Every structure is written in C-alpha cells, then in structure tokens.
Length: 254
Image 1 (cartoon, one colour):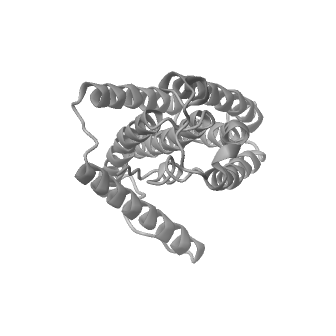
Image 2 (tube, rainbow, N blue to C red; image 1 turned 60 degrees about the horizontal axis):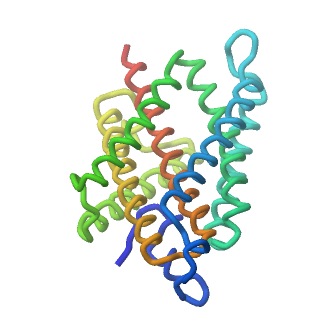
Image 3 (cartoon, rainbow, N blue to C red; image 1 turned 120 degrees about the vertical axis):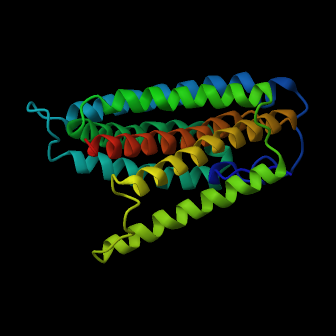
C-alpha cells in the first residue's frame, strides 16, 4: 500500500486514474527520467519568477517595498488554488504544474527578499541547505539507508499531520491577537521545533521518491510525470521555507 504525507501524493494518486488500467505502451507511460526532467523544469520556472519578484520587492535602500505583500500573498494564495486544482484534476498537471511553479515563484521571491533584508545571506544558505537535503535524502533512499516501510510511512504521515494542525492553530490564534508561545521564537524551544519540522519535511522527500517510483513501476499515464514533479515541488517549497525560518531564529539569537 502506497502512502505519502504530501497531500499531492496521497495513497490513491496512481491508483485512482479513472479506469484504473495500466498503460501498455512504454512511450505513453510515466518514467523516472521524465519525472526528473519535469521537476528540473518546474524549478527553473519558479527561479525565474522568484528572481522577478525579488527585483520588484527590494528597493534601492535594500529594504522591502510596498509591493512585497502583493507578491507574497498573491503568490501564496494563487499557488494554493492551483495546487488544489492540480490535486483534484491530475490529468491537468501538464498545464497546472508549470502554472503552480510560476505563481509559487512570486511567493518565494518576495518572502526570500524580506528574509534577506533582515539577515543578509540567509537566502543562499537556505537554498544550499534545501538542495543539499534533497540530494542527501535521494542518496539515502537509493542506497537503501532509509527504507519507506509501512511503519515509516505511517509515522511520517502522523507527524506531518500534527505539524499542519499546529500551524493551522497558530494562524487562527494570530487572527485573534494571540498565538502558540515559544515555537515561533528564537529560543531553544523554537529552534528545537524548527529542527523537528525540518526532519519531518526531509523524510517526506523519501516518501515522495518511493511514491513516484511506485507510479513508474505501475505504468501510470505519461501526464503523471508532471503530477509527480508537482508533488515533489510542494515538499521542496515547504523544506526551503522551514530552512529560512530556522536560520532566521538562529541569527536572531546573536
């Protein structure tokens, strides 16, 4: 049974495809190389729009401009809407996945510029840590150091769900002028919480690799390469944001 904590790569993703039949022709089936190539393409699209948003967000004095909120919230909400559409309409992924990458890039560029204005150099550190984690987890998965067993999957899914509930509760409480104490601060508890979240986000990459590989083995339709790449992008965006938050907490202690 396949399982992923990533909502874009849930248990039934490769099983609930309409007829449920396996594609017989190899040129019409999902491949690992095809998914990797499409993931790289989505990353390139997000970098392009992120660079544009960055240039529009940072003023001559190095501080965020009034347009920062527009790009950040516009990209965040737009990316969320497109993500939901992609999850519900998997066959649209060849169109919606690139759109998600483009729109999410605006969010990433704006929020990165804002973090960098507070702590110069933090963005490059977060980027390097994100891709370092990606390749490290890919090596661990391919070499068998980490195996996506059923218990492993259940544990990661449960932890991810718990984190999402904490973040949701924090958002709701912030709307009423309150919040969950300590976890968002630069103290030891806040740093410990960020480290825990980063570990779970990294382990989600293992589940994503396993899920995509299973889809390839089952002969999923070709368009699922775009969907698999989209699902991996969702995890990478989460991982990058969490690295930004952790680095900001660490530098906030100085």
